[in-house]
View 1: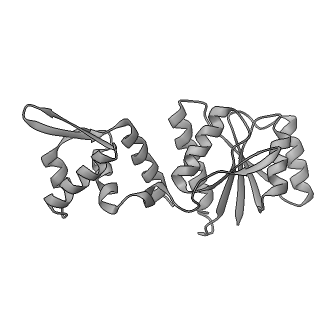
View 2: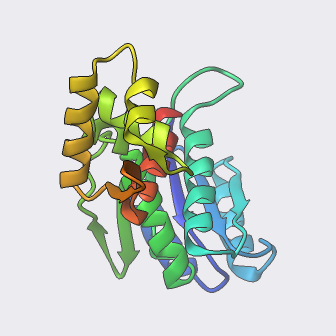
View 3: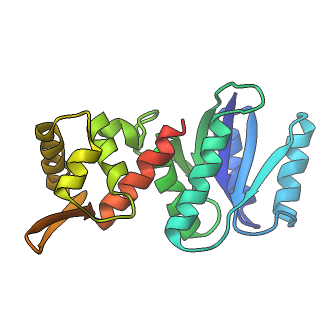
Length: 215
């Protein structure tokens, strides 16, 4: 099934209805920061009900930006994989509804997961996300493994090499150089030891690859 997901807040009827008219879908799911009981969602539910369909709603906690991105990523991942039937759904997301921060968080979540994304407000604009290309697909297996090793910790070069086994020391060191060149990892020297950690950008990439592997 193709599911249309849209960011939403009360008063966004026209944006949601434009997406419903212009984008093919079999089920509609709205994502918002508050309760779904205002006149806008009632109108949308009534229109969907005429064709025998219901409208799903997922409430996202209005916390820190990256927490919102993680929360939306979790919702999108759950929609892609139907646990009851074991089937996979195709997802498209409209980010024009709700606040700007909600739309930005939804766009970053779509980028992580390779989800088709649109901005629907008077006109429909398809956003430049490569459909199906998740964050994981942008990195090699060794690069992903190295990021996993460094999540939430700083460790020595020797510990990293050991954690990367059975891959060779040369492979581990080459992967470190590759990710350092991409500014995904950082290193420093202390007491004669080289210590390695994820950069702030690398921490986001590691989170993104984690969610992508859920697909």
